[in-house]
Image (cartoon, rainbow, N blue to C red; front, side):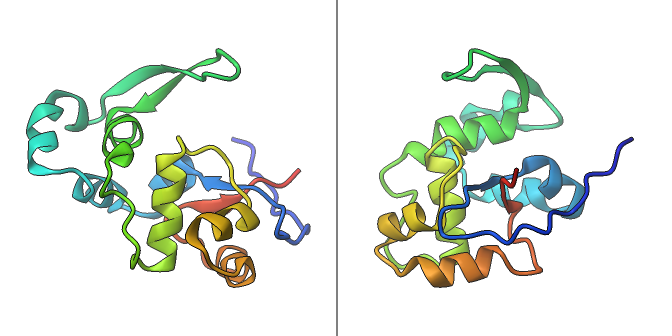
Length: 144
């Protein structure tokens, strides 16, 4: 297995960030618990066959038409739960709000400037939070 090198490039307000689900699942044994906590009791019952266990689904990237296998729970949260009206509330903690915005946008990469605009907050503290030594909920920069 080839280990990815850490980049020496420091993220900026224009650096895109996304949820790196591979990183998250490797570094947090409770990642599925958190995703499940986002589902309503109705959704837990409705999607039980998809979200329980390690079900993989084929997903087609709408921009590239590339077929990828994604975790069933992850797919349900992004395509169903995150699209609900009450998914993103006004007074949500900053890291959780960023996480939810990324989910709501299909985990498309977003810059701190874009996130700040949606959250109606200064993007500089968002950048400091996301570019620090600690990785929150797998939210990582996409550095070239």
